[in-house]
Length: 113
Length: 112
Image 1: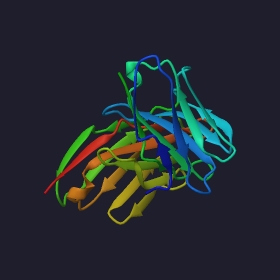
Image 2: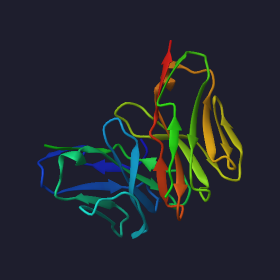
Image 3: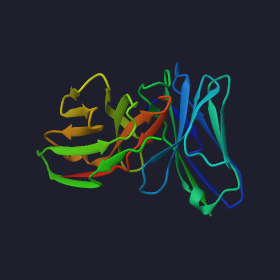
Image 4: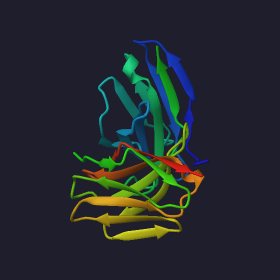
């Protein structure tokens, strides 16, 4: 157990819908990362937050947004969902968010039908 | 942006043999290179990492080497065991060091 929690574990929804994925970092970690992993694919970096502020953006679609709250938990919002958004979404946390070990959560499996 | 390439995509070895996975990166400013192991349906877990001020790092049967000039780094697993079977990902940071780019993964199969 990495200490990073993600909810829900599984999510099935229809195209065009909007969902919110939630992540709680390890105690003491200030940075949260979001990644997307499609079937049999590598991990695509989406976005990183540090202590409530956005630090870096990767290949995140405009339909997706995220935020980190004062209690350091983070939410990833996915809207106008398409079939291609079906994937495993991982959250990871680290202490400083600068070249330090990232601890991954168990992931949320999103299926868009 | 950074581009991380990983080879091979699949690797099959006999138990007890060594396994080597190679990655190249494009951003000369990258300074942190972690390796992750991901078992089927599970989260990626860090197995070893190296920073740009070091050329080699070992942890028991696992070692990583870094060649900054050539912009490549490699994972070496010695005395492989069936439980080493998994997908291994390399990664490199980039830009303002807060972005991470992952390789496409290597599926390692260790045959008993």
